[in-house]
Image (tube, rainbow over all chains, first blue to last red; front, top):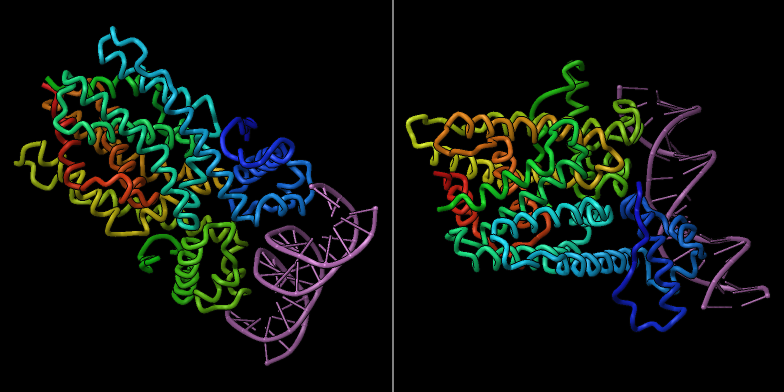
Length: 212
Length: 212
DNA sequence: GTCTATAGGCCGATAGAC
DNA sequence: GTCTATCGGCCTATAGAC
């Protein structure tokens, strides 16, 4: 599985210089091992090896395995939130709203397909949602909620869509996209239930604007 | 976590009498432990204890831990397929198609909310989709594909919905439902992103029938 | 057939050298 | 601060008694 080592921002700012660097190295190793094996099957030894440090160094930067996992997911969530909220979605207000909505769908799908670690985060958060319910709540609060609210605000502003309940319309919109990604990419359903991305987007836009 | 011990049907028919009974007992124990802990964190000892048998008995009925997990997921998938495909969806052809579609949405949501093991199966399949890709493909083939095709056939038959691409409309329909279940129930998003079930269904039906 | 008992290995976490 | 070495424990899987 290909995971790019993009631990490119965010917390750890309370640490200075080399300390933050080494924490970043550890989190990079943790990303590789946790994403490949899941939480329970991952071992601190393999994480240390992947990071190029020794086990006691792990424990000097993070309290235990749970603490390391929580720190990793929070960092990934933070980065994903940054990425999602800075997608250039409604750049050209001159274009018809239908085109802007289409670009919202395609750029979201593109970003999730391009950056495999985003789908990985979804899989981890869902898979560990019983063991780490607070992480799943953080995911909803930091990722899903702002995304849905952004869609909802756009749909509400442009009355031409004519949805009596923009919030629900926004959830259907994002739900269709998320479900598509889960089926095709996470559950490997591409061969069993094939569906071209453009065909999906066309049908989705058609349905969103179909209201008189 | 509440899990009802419903291993009520299906395979194991190649075993006779007591043998099938004991296999069922083991699978019931495996359901509880795998469901609570996930694949990696579950232990054969706890499964044996939950089933009321000893570890060697486990290994006499199933080759190893992987074999037991695969057998469990296949059984759950089989049962879920049976449940889904026998939901009384279009019982009254006299009713307007809009009402039938509404019933499809509500009965699907009801069934998934009532029977917690169905959501559990989704969580397990997604969480272990990298370790057991074939199980996730089976899930798509046996559950998602028939469900979507059923929706699609209904939408295509009743031209009043007017979707130019019923297959995509069906995926949006089921995607909205699945996404709702994942957000509210699996990711514990009920407090953060509250949304009444009826409000969701109303908006979904409105959108599906909104085409002239 | 089903049990008790155990082999053999990997795990998380840490003590102590440097 | 970071390492090597190790402890105690739980794991999967099995051998051997009954």
